[in-house]
Length: 356
Image 1 (tube, rainbow, N blue to C red):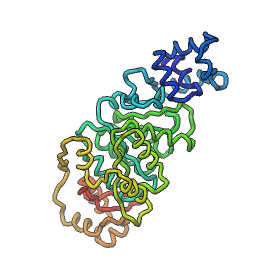
Image 2 (cartoon, rainbow, N blue to C red; image 1 turned 90 degrees about the horizontal axis):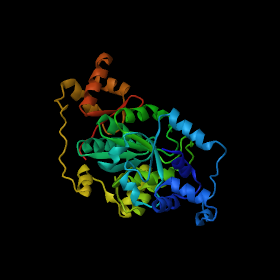
Image 3 (cartoon, helix red, strand yellow; image 1 turned 45 degrees about the horizontal axis):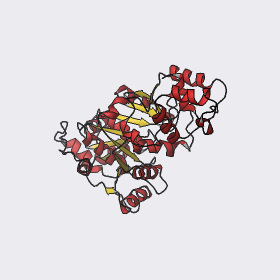
């Protein structure tokens, strides 16, 4: 990063104009020379002095230094090649972690409702787990709901995951995702943003962020979305970019499935099994074998029989099974390790369906 790159990044002109300029002049220093030093330059017709308060470059540089943030520009090798296909891509990306992996593997995005159901969580877990070992990265937006679980299960399964933010990379939004933010980086993932450090998560930023999510991805997968979901904006951006969109069908009675079902009705690929993803990517698929799978003992069978697809509270499990509380937690923990059940917030449990 140099001052010319940062100056150019902060210029109040469109991404498209910036990309055209950098393709023409090759370096930001050359652009500076022609706009600032050559008073009769035709470039002065549409480039003006940056509209920021005095000292803004130094402020941003300090934030970058203080938060150990890196910056990559459109003309550098580490900039995601898949984004270079679009003339409205950001000139610069701010990032933490390993951005190089975005150029060496297949990227797919997984997005969905912030207020997701057990069904959506279950589907996300199965999909992510089955991607393991296929050189596939998972891209999402570090939001609540499906985004959160897409990143979480990627971290748990040692899959490279990249979170694209709708704010400055020094700002974690929502704040409750701080632990996940740190876990992504600890496991060798990446956090990126086109917004300069210090940028707040205002609503206007997120549709812009969504275009980066879809732009980085070969396929965009929508798992649960209502008709006004931001996930539909991501899907629309993917279609504009010539990308494939997949949607998980859901109940016609569920508000969370209205958007995903509409996408399918409008031509998106229905995701009815994990194999559908691999077929679309033209990759051979072999279903993962759960090495933790063991035969359930009698007490585990007793618990399994009272748990269903509808969340059941632990107090009800104890009443229905009459198993001592000193044993129940250990048994439930073992069953989670074997992917027989899932624990939801509030001490609710459901069966884990890995049959898609």
